[in-house]
Image 1 (cartoon, rainbow, N blue to C red):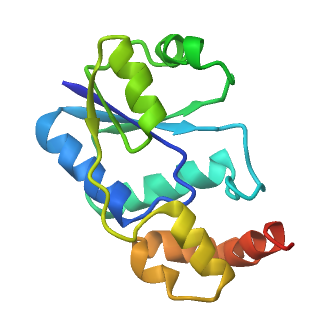
Image 2 (cartoon, one colour; image 1 turned 90 degrees about the vertical axis):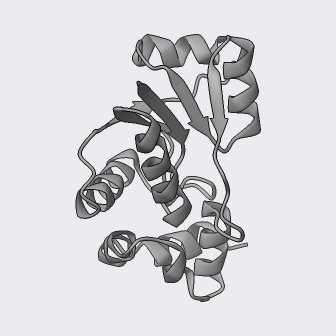
Length: 165
Protein backbone atom coordinates (compact mmCIF):
# COMPACT_ATOMS: atom_id res chain seq x y z
CA UNK A 1 0.00 0.00 0.00
CA UNK A 2 1.24 3.48 -0.90
CA UNK A 3 0.42 6.32 1.48
CA UNK A 4 0.25 9.95 0.42
CA UNK A 5 1.08 12.48 3.14
CA UNK A 6 0.24 16.04 2.12
CA UNK A 7 1.45 19.10 3.99
CA UNK A 8 3.37 22.34 3.68
CA UNK A 9 5.96 21.31 6.32
CA UNK A 10 6.85 24.88 7.36
CA UNK A 11 8.82 23.45 9.17
CA UNK A 12 8.73 19.66 9.43
CA UNK A 13 8.16 18.88 13.11
CA UNK A 14 7.84 16.02 15.59
CA UNK A 15 4.17 15.40 14.79
CA UNK A 16 5.02 15.07 11.08
CA UNK A 17 7.72 12.52 11.90
CA UNK A 18 5.30 10.59 14.09
CA UNK A 19 2.73 10.59 11.27
CA UNK A 20 5.28 9.28 8.74
CA UNK A 21 6.19 6.43 11.09
CA UNK A 22 2.51 5.63 11.70
CA UNK A 23 1.72 5.61 7.97
CA UNK A 24 4.61 3.24 7.27
CA UNK A 25 3.22 0.75 9.82
CA UNK A 26 0.24 0.32 7.49
CA UNK A 27 1.91 0.83 4.13
CA UNK A 28 4.93 -0.14 2.09
CA UNK A 29 5.91 3.34 1.00
CA UNK A 30 5.04 6.94 1.75
CA UNK A 31 4.93 9.78 -0.73
CA UNK A 32 5.47 13.07 1.01
CA UNK A 33 3.74 15.76 -1.03
CA UNK A 34 5.00 19.24 -0.27
CA UNK A 35 2.07 21.56 -0.87
CA UNK A 36 2.36 25.23 -1.78
CA UNK A 37 5.69 24.18 -3.28
CA UNK A 38 6.07 27.41 -5.24
CA UNK A 39 5.83 29.51 -2.06
CA UNK A 40 8.78 30.70 0.01
CA UNK A 41 9.90 33.66 2.07
CA UNK A 42 6.30 34.50 3.08
CA UNK A 43 4.66 34.58 6.50
CA UNK A 44 2.94 31.19 6.08
CA UNK A 45 5.66 29.66 3.91
CA UNK A 46 9.06 30.95 5.04
CA UNK A 47 11.08 27.99 3.78
CA UNK A 48 11.67 27.15 0.11
CA UNK A 49 10.84 23.87 -1.58
CA UNK A 50 14.55 22.98 -1.72
CA UNK A 51 14.93 23.69 1.99
CA UNK A 52 11.83 21.69 2.93
CA UNK A 53 12.98 18.74 0.81
CA UNK A 54 16.43 18.76 2.40
CA UNK A 55 15.01 19.02 5.91
CA UNK A 56 12.59 16.12 5.39
CA UNK A 57 15.24 13.97 3.71
CA UNK A 58 17.71 14.62 6.55
CA UNK A 59 15.15 13.77 9.25
CA UNK A 60 13.94 10.57 7.59
CA UNK A 61 17.48 9.39 6.81
CA UNK A 62 18.50 9.98 10.44
CA UNK A 63 15.46 7.95 11.54
CA UNK A 64 16.41 5.06 9.23
CA UNK A 65 13.37 5.58 7.01
CA UNK A 66 14.08 4.82 3.37
CA UNK A 67 10.66 3.90 1.94
CA UNK A 68 9.72 7.43 0.86
CA UNK A 69 9.58 9.83 -2.05
CA UNK A 70 9.28 13.60 -1.77
CA UNK A 71 7.24 15.31 -4.47
CA UNK A 72 6.25 18.94 -4.90
CA UNK A 73 2.65 20.03 -5.38
CA UNK A 74 2.24 23.64 -6.51
CA UNK A 75 -0.99 25.43 -5.67
CA UNK A 76 -3.58 25.90 -8.40
CA UNK A 77 -6.12 27.82 -6.26
CA UNK A 78 -9.04 25.76 -7.53
CA UNK A 79 -10.56 23.39 -4.96
CA UNK A 80 -12.71 21.62 -7.55
CA UNK A 81 -9.69 20.61 -9.63
CA UNK A 82 -7.12 20.18 -6.86
CA UNK A 83 -7.42 16.41 -6.31
CA UNK A 84 -7.13 15.80 -10.06
CA UNK A 85 -4.11 18.13 -10.07
CA UNK A 86 -2.47 16.03 -7.34
CA UNK A 87 -3.34 12.81 -9.21
CA UNK A 88 -1.74 14.20 -12.39
CA UNK A 89 1.52 14.58 -10.47
CA UNK A 90 1.21 11.48 -8.26
CA UNK A 91 -0.92 8.92 -10.15
CA UNK A 92 -0.68 5.96 -7.75
CA UNK A 93 -1.50 6.02 -4.05
CA UNK A 94 -3.96 4.14 -1.89
CA UNK A 95 -4.57 6.26 1.21
CA UNK A 96 -4.18 9.93 2.06
CA UNK A 97 -2.82 11.34 5.30
CA UNK A 98 -3.42 14.99 6.11
CA UNK A 99 -4.03 17.35 8.98
CA UNK A 100 -5.86 19.84 6.76
CA UNK A 101 -9.67 19.69 6.85
CA UNK A 102 -10.12 20.99 3.31
CA UNK A 103 -7.66 18.45 1.91
CA UNK A 104 -9.44 15.71 3.87
CA UNK A 105 -12.85 16.72 2.50
CA UNK A 106 -11.68 17.07 -1.11
CA UNK A 107 -10.07 13.62 -1.18
CA UNK A 108 -13.03 11.97 0.58
CA UNK A 109 -15.37 13.51 -1.99
CA UNK A 110 -13.30 11.80 -4.71
CA UNK A 111 -13.65 8.44 -2.94
CA UNK A 112 -10.24 8.19 -1.31
CA UNK A 113 -9.63 6.74 2.10
CA UNK A 114 -8.31 9.59 4.23
CA UNK A 115 -6.60 9.17 7.55
CA UNK A 116 -6.71 12.41 9.51
CA UNK A 117 -3.39 12.71 11.25
CA UNK A 118 -3.36 12.78 15.01
CA UNK A 119 -2.16 16.15 16.10
CA UNK A 120 0.25 16.28 19.01
CA UNK A 121 -1.07 18.91 21.43
CA UNK A 122 0.67 22.26 21.00
CA UNK A 123 2.76 21.08 18.03
CA UNK A 124 2.08 22.82 14.75
CA UNK A 125 4.24 24.63 12.23
CA UNK A 126 2.28 27.84 12.89
CA UNK A 127 3.01 27.58 16.61
CA UNK A 128 6.68 26.83 15.92
CA UNK A 129 7.04 29.90 13.69
CA UNK A 130 5.29 31.99 16.35
CA UNK A 131 7.68 30.64 18.98
CA UNK A 132 10.63 31.59 16.76
CA UNK A 133 9.34 35.16 16.56
CA UNK A 134 8.91 35.34 20.35
CA UNK A 135 12.32 33.76 21.09
CA UNK A 136 10.63 30.82 22.82
CA UNK A 137 11.95 27.25 22.94
CA UNK A 138 10.73 26.00 19.54
CA UNK A 139 13.61 23.53 19.16
CA UNK A 140 11.94 20.94 21.40
CA UNK A 141 9.06 20.62 18.90
CA UNK A 142 11.19 19.58 15.93
CA UNK A 143 13.73 16.83 15.25
CA UNK A 144 17.39 17.77 15.82
CA UNK A 145 18.07 17.77 12.07
CA UNK A 146 15.49 20.53 11.64
CA UNK A 147 17.10 22.65 14.36
CA UNK A 148 20.52 22.23 12.72
CA UNK A 149 19.24 23.08 9.26
CA UNK A 150 17.27 26.14 10.34
CA UNK A 151 20.28 27.44 12.24
CA UNK A 152 22.51 26.83 9.19
CA UNK A 153 20.26 28.95 6.93
CA UNK A 154 19.54 31.54 9.64
CA UNK A 155 15.88 30.55 9.38
CA UNK A 156 14.77 32.15 12.65
CA UNK A 157 16.04 35.52 11.44
CA UNK A 158 14.13 34.99 8.19
CA UNK A 159 10.89 34.13 10.00
CA UNK A 160 11.26 37.17 12.25
CA UNK A 161 12.04 39.44 9.28
CA UNK A 162 9.04 38.28 7.28
CA UNK A 163 6.73 38.78 10.25
CA UNK A 164 7.72 42.34 11.16
CA UNK A 165 4.67 44.52 11.47
